[in-house]
Image (cartoon, rainbow, N blue to C red; front, side, top):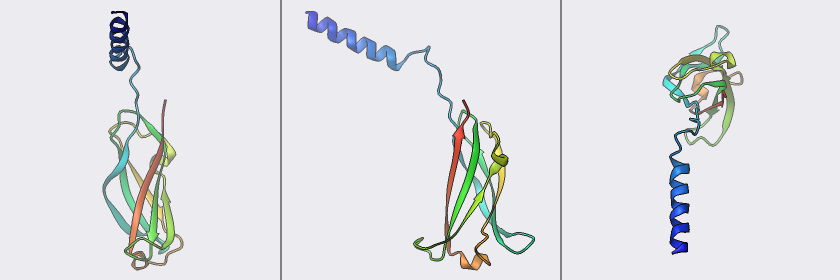
Length: 127
């Protein structure tokens, strides 16, 4: 009998801990590429990528960086450049907000050299 009461107590504690209405809501940003990435050129002729990111999370993100690895082949085996863009100038991106960025491929002469690319977005969550 004592074992059953103890087991029931542990089960109740577990259920209360999992559904605690007083626990603070954890807010995190979820910053994703919004729309298509445009391939353009700078005024001095370097290839650049332009686009928008959007925060689809419930918290604010900041220090966002969009890193675009440029490859010389479609199989993405040889990196020839890495372009980095900083949406919102590293400032806050609130939930539902979009932010523009430009990322320049300084080591490439044209977009024809870039046969494929990958996009990685990183950020920090605001407390």
